[in-house]
Amino acid sequence: MKDSNNISEELLETIERYLNGTLNTQELKDFNRLLDIDDDFKAQVEDVRTMLFGIETQSLKEQLNEFHKDVPKQIKTEPSPKQKVRYLRYSRIAAAAAIIIAVGSIWFFSTPKNEKLYANYFKPDPGLPTTMGNTANFIFYDAMVNYKYGDYDIAISKWETLAEQKPENDTLNYFLGVAHLAIRKEAEAIPFLERTIQTKKDFALIDDAYYYLGLAYLKEGNLELAKKNLNISNKDLGKELLSKLK
Image (cartoon, rainbow, N blue to C red; front, side, top):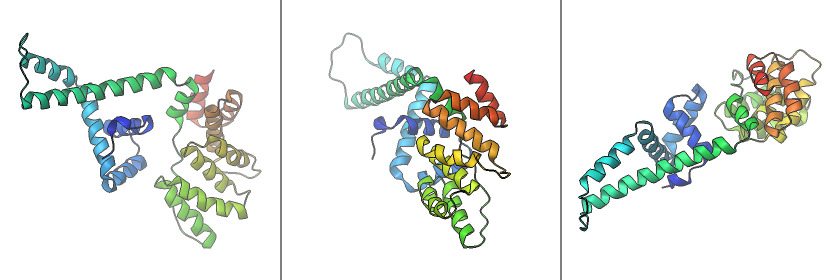
């Protein structure tokens, strides 16, 4: 079983969102799918549930107070096995709670504002309906299925094969860009999104392309280009984010 104390900040945040019921439909579907196939992951989720429950309900404090009441004052006797188990249990919860609080505090105070905004505003495009057509379209929509399940690396691999044949395809470039953002590869995402906005045709997702390109530059720390692209996008979220960058 994996040590829950070694859980990454990113995974801890995702599990907390799951427990709080704030995952979107696709994220929840992917999360439950992983719970079904990975026992270690399921155990980690239960550990975090226990730790967060202790913090949010202040049961940790109540349990510790009750524990101290059970310990006779100024009597130095060897604790019974039952008391030892109880002490170890409370110590484990207290240590875990301290770790969660410490990690959260470090992330909040050390993470640059730009990255916090990016984390709050980035959400992968939900994707297109997966209808199969000719061979070329089959490959595209087959990759779209992977994309929707969060298998971004697989989707990218399939789409890149098509992109070699159609390097100017707006839809391919757009989803390749967003998929790279989803796996935190902003530098790789930017060229695809830049090619998308350079289209000379009417592209239904052009406002989304400018929005994601603005987010990519925001994560890269280029505020000038982030503001420029967010300003061009007509997405409400883009305007909202832009107001927070001024």
